[in-house]
Length: 313
Image (cartoon, rainbow, N blue to C red; front, side, top):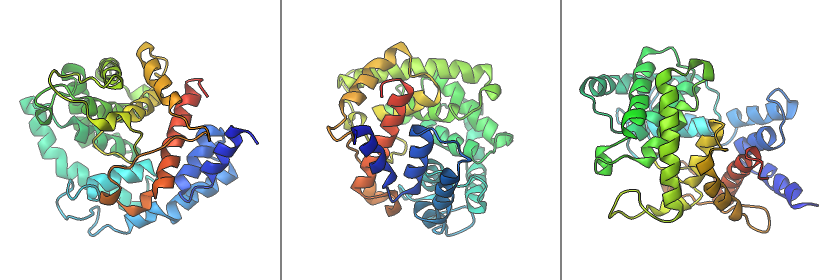
């Protein structure tokens, strides 16, 4: 049996239905209406992490702490919604929709203030929220459009400059902002969004190639070691794998500056065909995201899907 066959079998042996679902759709090319794929999708909704996380809501649309969507990390409302989007929870689920509604309500006043004052920071937060709000199919909600405008403007004009990054442009913010914009269907991308994507991709890849060489983009600063690990889940952070996931969603893996990162990722493959993953926040998030073996599966699946799309697998 070939390494690739063993690799697929290993992924399909996961206890996490989302990994099995994405293996079948992303690597085996099965359509979403395939009976086996449909069965995996139903398993996502009915077993494991998705129902476990949804069941931990302590008030409509909220996880602990009530009225504090950002803390505790990484189980409160914001982070739980991020995980549910990654896990492919049913976007129509009432509890997921309640969470999406709560977050738009809780953040709207701040968004309007930032748009008025020109405060363009915190885009890692806004980008992540936009991502799961789009997944919740809230496109026509005016509150989301305001957040989207703030996110895209910050990326285009300031490369996500942020007070929490010493008022420097922020690669994590850029990655999370692009993660949001990638979820916008082509026909809905405004000129602002298109320009932000172009500016953001160029900035993020230039930064990523510095991190590959363990060089900071800001003089006198050290490179965060997370950049060169393959981690899942990660939250407001980014690593090289996540950057390439973003590029894959933007159909931009053939960008001239992407090749060094793709080659680096390809060369991390073990003789057994797998990639080794890291879960730096395992003890701080929901345990249903999986043990170390499942972390390896998560990052191996994501890496293989990227390399397959790039024609390198």
